[in-house]
Image (cartoon, rainbow, N blue to C red; front, side, top):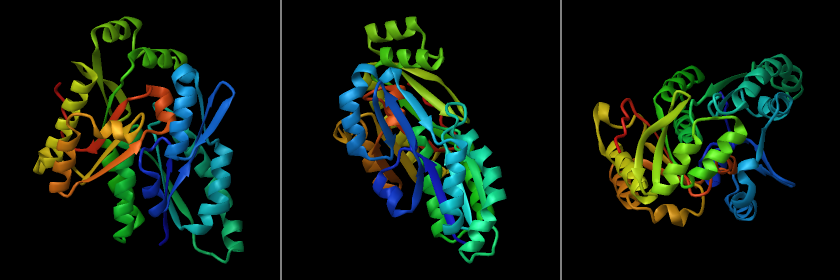
Length: 318
């Protein structure tokens, strides 16, 4: 069976990895004023757009995912011919309409694929599954990497589906914003009151950074730590302990994903990074690093750090 894999462009994995493993993108378009860019995970284009437009008016950005019709057309014209079964893994539906669009499109796809597939000389059925990763950004990468491992190991679609849906429930994403005023301005534009004016003002004045945690689609603060670099160090060291632990205290998959709202050299200079890299290497855990998607950066701001991994237990204590 030919199994295809699809993610949206908020999924923070390196473009080289996506291309090498034939993971297709549902791009999200970002508009800031008159400037428009379709996010295809091109780090150079993302950083250029970031430096040119994001600092001034990024919080006003409009993000537009593929519509139901665009997703239907892409699947019917391309994926229904190239593959027999496709897994489409999306950003959590609590933060974006990508999942709902893809899920609605799936009904039309399954009704419309037969003539196109038959014209290509393929008479076997086509199927797909839309999976809500229940997470954001770097944490979305966990299910994508696992789907590659399972597909390349020759596992069938039912086993892959069960594994990915289980993994999504136990994937944890952690986010540290650098600029709380930007994050508050962005949440106001989105109608999200999760960062109040008072907490943003006090946090900026006192240099207090929240550590936000996402699991099963729900996002909230789990710690408040003085100083961005201190917060980053605590989070990276916490992740290193999970990567080096065994049994129920360790990781469910040998994968840690990092993304950063800027140049990767800045990520690698953060305290705690080298320790995490060493622990991952010594424990055969793959460490993925990527520039955060443009979609992510317009929502959480420049310089934000995101960590993703899967574990049964993940209680961060700052």
